[in-house]
Image 1 (cartoon, rainbow, N blue to C red):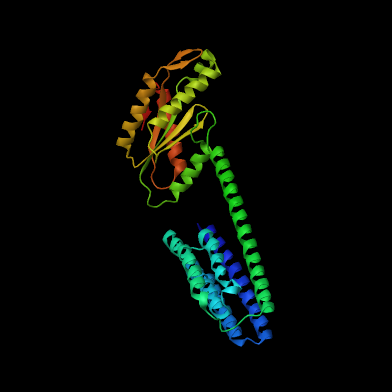
Image 2 (cartoon, rainbow, N blue to C red):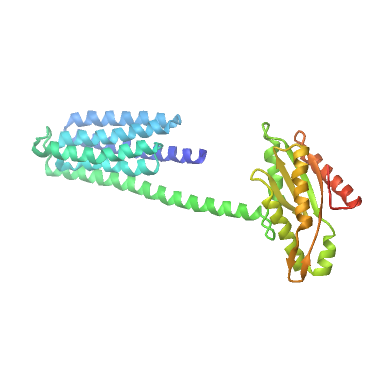
Length: 341
């Protein structure tokens, strides 16, 4: 979000600088022709763009965008009034449509209103000037000069817009690739659960959250998993791991942590959970695993799990994990197929 605001801010600075430079050139051009009212208007235009620049520098991108939008539309109206419809200044209003639609920090309703009013402004100028005689009757040479300036302006703006659109698309693609790589690096390829890397990032997040809900953690291990691999083969062992992972996934909530900790170990973090409620959930999972018949190519397999559980107090995740590991070991020594808290 911050990056997007900085991008809009930089975009507006570029637009303001180009438009101000154009009005300086226009002012010099009309000073040479001796049409001094336009020189005065050009100086006012530059002053308005200077205000927009400082407003944008202060971080008020929406207000700066509004000033630019009103300025372009007003310039279109004044140029048509002063020089007539033949100078095609009414079409300058179209320049503001793309910036408003793509970059300026307006709400959707404001964008619709601004973009919608532009055809009205253009048609109003065409109708008004149908029988209108402009104060400054522009000669063909002056017309060509104005036309050249407008083409240069539109060329600059078009270049910036095209570059901005391409840059935006490249950034979006890059972000998608980065997010995809992050997702892949945080997922265990066998079970589809989050991995230890993700869990460690999760620990940092909840450790910095002073308003977090209570967490109850459990380190689980599949009992006698080595015997499963030795008896049925590693492919069957992989099926067992996937089955346990699916049971954990189905019985966890969206706010819970479920990850493959390593080997046949899984880590579960239950949010908004005290030890009593946490034990009920963990016992439910243990019983589901105990009663599950896992079908493999090497035969049907039944396994059990043992877990060590502990509540997170403060921010000391190392202490919680060490306590879970100790209780898991105690559960293994005392008969397995149990949750120790």
